[in-house]
Image 1 (cartoon, each protein chain N blue to C red):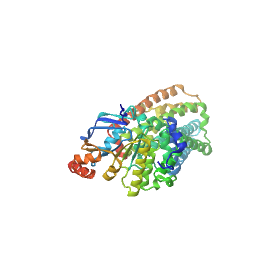
Image 2: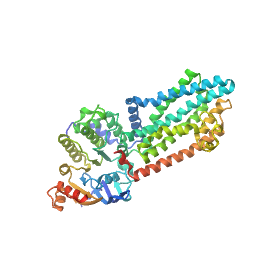
Image 3: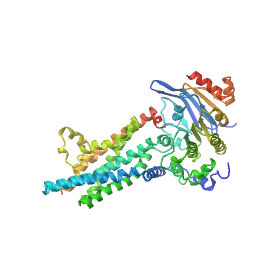
Image 4: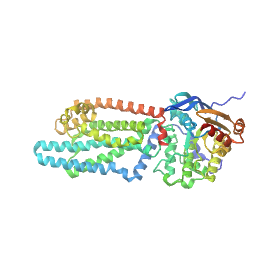
Amino acid sequence: MTAASAPGTAGASALAARRHSSWLCIKAIARRHWYVLRRSPHRLFDVTIWPLVDVLLFGSIATFFASSAGGPAGQRGFGYLLAGIVLWHVVYQSQISLSTGFLEEAWTRNLLNLMVTPMREWEYVAGVVLLGMAKLVMGVGLVALVAVIAFAFDITTLGVSLVPIAAVLLLTGWVIALFVIGLVLRFGAGAEALAWGILFVALPLSGVFYPVEALPAVFRPIAVALPTTHAFAAGRSVLDGSGLDWSSLALAGVTSVALTAAGVGWVVAMLRMFRRRGYVTRYS
Amino acid sequence: MSQVPDPVLAAHGLRKRFKGVQAVDGIDLVMRPGERVGLLGPNGAGKTTTLLMLLGVITPDAGTVTVVGHHLPEGRSRAMADVGFAAGYLPLTERLRVREFLRMYGQIYGIADPDALIEAGLERFRILGLADRLGTELSSGQRTLVGIVKATLHRPRLLVLDEPTNALDPDVAGRVRSGLLELCRDEGIALLVTSHNMVEVERVCERVVFVSKGRVVADGRPGDVASQFDRADLEGVFLHLAEEHR
């Protein structure tokens, strides 16, 4: 070995201390996605432009609705729409950051590189989620801020009730992302349209802006099965001045657990199929 | 009495079928520490499928794989901690500078501070000047070299390279060859390599395993295998098998 290529004392001790560390894996993946975000300005759209567009659109509709309807009904609708869009961005940001984080590996044919490392699947997901949390703070923070500045609506008036509601929405976003990842594993990057499209299906069914009773009867059973429906209902009860609706929150918790189990089961089954059918060759 | 060291890789009875085609049909492969083995065969012979099963990326229909003492698939994570993999056809992770890319993989392999190893690895293949370049700014040969540095950063016990000298000019291919030989000699790393460049294989590998139609048809020292097929060299064996494979 040449003197220059020898690892030296520092290298030798780094090697001697080498041992698998989940935290190192998580940090490495989070940093990798931070570089992607920093060096691809168009990826900032999800945390800047779309939140801005949404809050302007729904805030303006809410303002128009409030001034047209007037009175308590108008004010109620105003609050429902703005709280709905701010809280919806918790689902949107958590879902999009995890889905597109995984899709980034598919787009750049990086899956095989990652699959032959000691990193476990959950460590990878945790790394993407870690950076996703930062993106979520940016995206939701922007929506909430613009809602205050442009429409005088402050989501923090929901108080501590925000914490469990946001937690359910955050978890739901991640679980929806697991369904998308499973579909990409099964059908290839062609399924990427679902990363965004699936949210347009979940949005009307989740009663984001209205109680579930407003939906056509045929869709209500689906809506009731979604944790988001109950989380938004709990949020509206706080807005209405009735305090946190614990029964809605409990239903949100139960359906979250069921959906999470289904999402994890789905992605594990798709990963097994991915390995069994050798789909990794699609990305190499 | 001298003890035979435990194998770094032991695969027995590997089989894999895709959509009615038997891609791999009962492959056995055992490698000892420090051994340099070429896995050869014409396109479609089952080399890459075999490699991917050895790495735990594809689940075999039948057979067992043990890597550095860990059975796959349950011991995959522990096994891969001692394996390095690079392929000539894989791109580098996009939007990362070379140093960032290597740091990321170093940490995934459990090295908290890999900077000194990154410097040494880049120096070994004489590409230290690329450290601050983005992966997208590199030529295919440079990307291959960085990929090999990534695969060897953690001093694996088994290094698996799929078509490493694909699209490399003779100078870069020579650097890859000498760097690999140096690593295997100094660190006792076992090397499993696939390549269509038979001259390259003869220079690097002390043992070759020829695969055809998903089966091992020859396994031995390059000269012995050539004699077995009554050919002058491995290129002759390859062409003979490719003819049969059609």
